[in-house]
Length: 66
View (cartoon, one colour):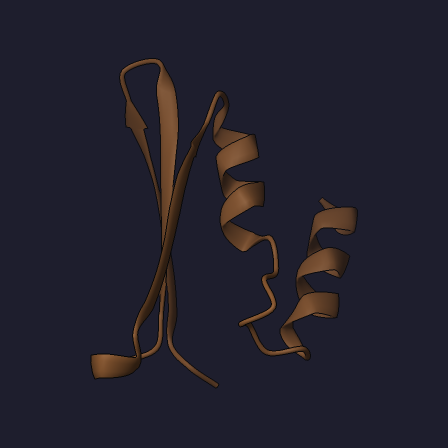
């Protein structure tokens, strides 16, 4: 599985998030902002078509349990 890093930071009144996955030349990056910290965390961990399929149920189960 590829290395995966997510960062959530406060910038003024907004929360920004950034996700980096992969290593070297194959690194992909997604970023965005949200009004609340919890929205930023959810957006960072939202699965995308580029992510491995086996990761999706794990993240959904984690969100339902929280």
